[in-house]
Amino acid sequence: MPKARVKFKPPGTRPFDLFGFTADHPDDEFRILSNYPTEEGLYVILEATMTNPDAVVDLFERSPMSYEVLHADEHTALIQYLLPFVPPPLRAVFSSGNLPQFPLLVQDGWILTDLTTTQGRLSDFRDELEATGFAFEVVSVIQSTDPTDLLTDRQRRFMAEALEQGYYDTPRDCSLTDLAAALDVSKSTASVVLHRAEETVVKEFFAESAD
Image (cartoon, rainbow, N blue to C red; front, side, top):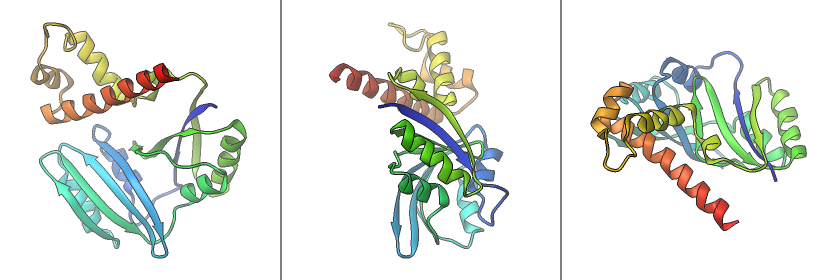
């Protein structure tokens, strides 16, 4: 069964424009960890790893939506909010017979998600999504997964820099502080991005080994 990476974004702008906000913050990371549809709408949990996480809290403060800051520190904000409707992409996922796989990455104005699906269901999802007016792109469709194909561009860039700097050598030629400086990010950001990339690679490697 193929694994597909797809991305989509809404047409135009909305009163609450998380897509546009992420496009304005290309060096920060936004992930939708989960969502839950109810009669009231869609509950969503968003994790933002940013140089200034207060900015995303301010975005919600200016929005008409109900929200709660579940956690906040120097570089991360975890926010639960309620959309008053179920967005067309999620309806398209369900009606095409697919299931959303979390986390969803929100990057540069797009939502990126991975689907383990059939070619027919992927085609149905594309048709359903195009009918909503959302832009849609299949980034990749692969049968046998190389773990690095599951990394975001940012995660791949961080790991490539870590390798080049000798961060993974024994003994290390580069500390996390040095690596963060080379990447021009905070030490906390470098640690979070590398950890998630390493988690993806390790889990996929052992999943493939088990298969």
